[in-house]
Length: 150
Image (cartoon, rainbow, N blue to C red; front, side, top):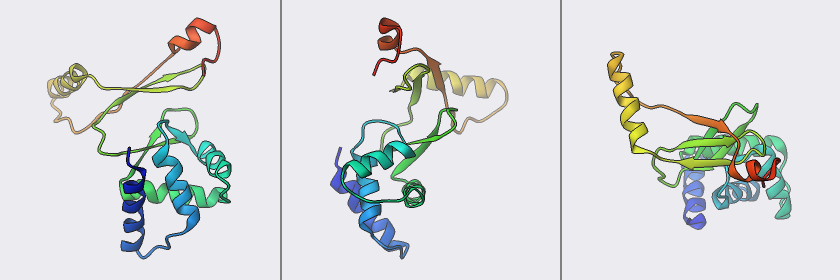
């Protein structure tokens, strides 16, 4: 994970689009790039504040939208009523499992699933372009403890 490179790419994107490169935008981008989690807006705000930076909610939303437009961050909607964000970093397409107890998100990739979705699409006369899969369940930690496992 090369946060400095990601930040430089974001600076370049902002300059190319004649947008100000502000400390708040860079702090928000840094939080997302440095995270290994799928962050909600609230989590981004808390992490930015924990770093001593002052950024309002509107600034956070606008900056996250810019990060998505730049292609450096992907927006995810797991049906929880809010969006989550993760850096792209050239990561290949992957799926997600979401714990319905603690909210933990795990990523996985399975070539069998990729082949199956192509075969299913073709059997119905489609040429598959993309798909999205989220598996909802209870993670191993929550199964063991009987409650939130994080």
